Amino acid sequence: MQPLRALPSVDRLLSSAEGMSLARTHGRAAATDALRAALADARAAAQGGGAVPDAAAIHAAAATALERAAASTLRPVLNLTGTVLHTNLGRAILAEAAITAATDAMRAPAALEYDLSTGRRGERDDHIAPLICELTGAEAATVVNNNAAAVLIVLNTLAEGREAIVSRGELVEIGGAFRIPDIMARAGVRLVEVGTTNRTHPRDYRGAVTDATALMMKVHPSNYRIEGFTRAVDPAELASIAAEACVPMMNDLGSGTLIDMTRWGLPAEPTVRQAVAEGAGIVTFSGDKLLGGPQAGFIVGRADLIARISRNPLKRALRLDKIRLAAIEATLRLYRDPDRLAERLPTLRLLTRPEAEIAAQAHRLAPAVARLLPEYRVSVIDCASQIGSGALPVETLPSAALAISGEGGDAPDRLAARLRSGPVPVIGRIRDGALILDLRCLSDDGALLAALA
Ligand SMILES: *Cc1c(COP(=O)(O)O)cnc(C)c1O
View 1 (spheres, rainbow, N blue to C red):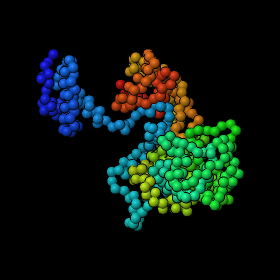
View 2: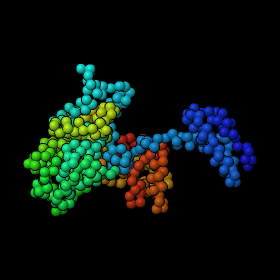
View 3: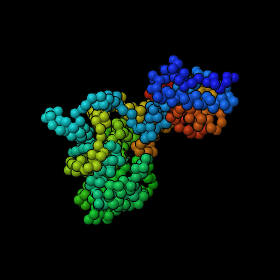
View 4: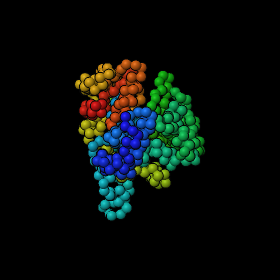
């Protein structure tokens, strides 16, 4: 065993070839700190009676620590959870056209609030409002940070200091602390609940109208379904009740979609065009749910109401930057050609992947995955993917998965932790004592094999 004083100094470690390489990659200050820390660990280990590490081992320990510190915690992952629009994994992944538009907008100044035809100041909404109106049939449109912000600014603009009427069956809570009663309170609006959890009638809304009523609100029950003895007032009927009371009706669609999903054999979800045609004065929906774009909140509807919303000072606080506007515009343009949408929009492409194709992929990958994880059993199972993010909560899509199990009750947890720890983390879900990797969102076999290797 080497004596303790055989340990090299920080200066010697830093001036060696390996030390200089660490300094070039990570910066001199960070490399010095990491070598000093690795040296302290080595000294402690040696004092504890262990072997005295040599310079190579200390360099290696410092390099590992530096690489770990340099790796982003917001790094790309493989979403094999089976939930296509996974809120915790960032929801929709963008179309190539949107990625190009966003990076172009990042690299150079853009005519964001500048009218190129007159050389005068322009409006940032003007880049996308006409396109949104074309795709939804709405008179006017604006866009804010996300749909929660859209709901907040609409309520605040149209009903501050007054009352908004909502059915008790629609007082939703979305993951991440979005709750209708709380957002109402923050908007300065008094919530008037009508009906019961399972049944709300037209007379309930009519009976709640007072001089203070400013708005009737319909909310899409995004992540639950009330079944059995139920009654809800449909949006068209609520719009006419609102018209009788001389107040607007707002419909928070949540996910919303610009196109009829049944065209691709997917479950039906109300389209924005439908909601506008049903007479809602305002319709709100998300950019990164079924629409498949970046995070955003769309507000479409009557021109007079949109004009009032755009003048609210909150609009300035909730506005979008040029990067997201560019990505939204490019995403919306894809909707002009619905025939090619499923090949161009990743969200739709993943949602419409045929079960047989996913099953074939699972059978193709299973032997290779088994070779990479020799201490586990790998089998192919049928499973059900979810759409996620409050779209079609109870509907699932048939899919296929790798089910990976091992010895001991904690085997799935241990494997899940190991797969999360790689340079490209693989995120699955644990069920029935196995780690389930739903392959619906795996576009490239090689990506999984590389991540496991
Ligand atoms: C998802 C959702 C929201 C919140 O939208 P974000 O884009 O996540 O802010 C609001 N209302 C409903 C009904 C939703 O489903």
